[in-house]
Amino acid sequence: MGMSEAADRADTFVPHRYREQLVDLGEIRMNYVAEGDPAAPALLLIPAQGESWWGYEDAIGLLSSQFQVFAIDLRGQGRTTWTPGRYNLGTWGADVERFIDLVIQCPAIVAGNSSGGIITAYVAAYGKPGLVRGAILEDPPLFSSQAAPPYGPGMMQTLGPIFKLWAKWLGPQWSIGDWTGMVKAAPDELPAFLHPGIGFMMGDGDPGAGASPTPVQHLKEYDPEWGQAWADDTANAGVDHATLLAQVKSPVLLTHHFHMTDPDTGQLMGAMTDIQAAQARRLLESTGRPVTFTPLDAPHTMHEPMAQRYVDIITEWIKTLP
Image 1 (cartoon, rainbow, N blue to C red):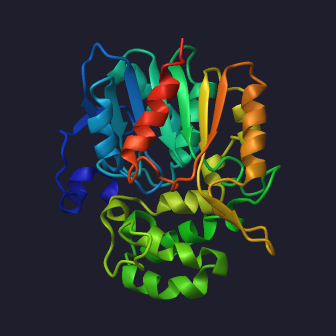
Image 2: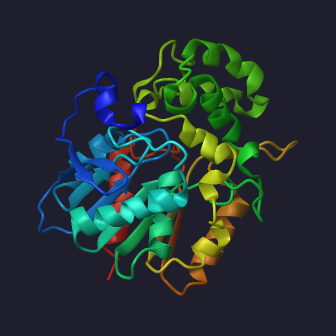
């Protein structure tokens, strides 16, 4: 498996504020942190694509006084096992379900950002009954991360070209690793509507900065095969987003952050168009479970740069849970 075990990539990682632990889930060993009182309600945080658990570092500090907070590295990210050929909603969802079963051992509130939000919805729909007390979907790319969605633009009209670029120049398991070549090729290989986002997606998170001259930490910890799986739609194997949403069995908070649609091409910079967000909400409401929809003027991974605001929004909503 070469790069599959985190021990093989030991020099990749940097120290963090909280103690990291590993749990054996069978196919993978999952890296996680757990902070707060074990008697407090359990809250599980699932990062975005290309983000490790430590994107939530500030949020964990604010949340751990009220919750027992768990934050994980999904397979293919951080210190969790990389699994070539095995990246899709089914495997990520099963990993989360096992983690709740084996580590948390009680029903949890689950909050996921971006593709982590789709994984959260997957577990709330297809996981064992009672596993998820409430599902927080933080700006998930519902419909927009499908190849041919029933509503609005699909993966290659949104961020798909970025994921394709990562996969091509970095290679599965970083087998190519040509960061310099990628940065140089980006303006030519990416459609014009994504150009303003190049610095954000390949930089150190400062929206004003350009692409970083060397690999940024969160992508060093990422298997670029993840991106390939979304670009070629294998990430969605056997999962249709509309069907998924209509099966969700817990109360839901759905947030919708910054987005911009190109008036000429319909291409989307952001996670969902207004139409996609409205259709997601309609399908969630069709389940008869309580749904809160909150549009926000916020960046896509809001929990990192705006940790306090993120915490305020989710804790207010959590108070409404039965």
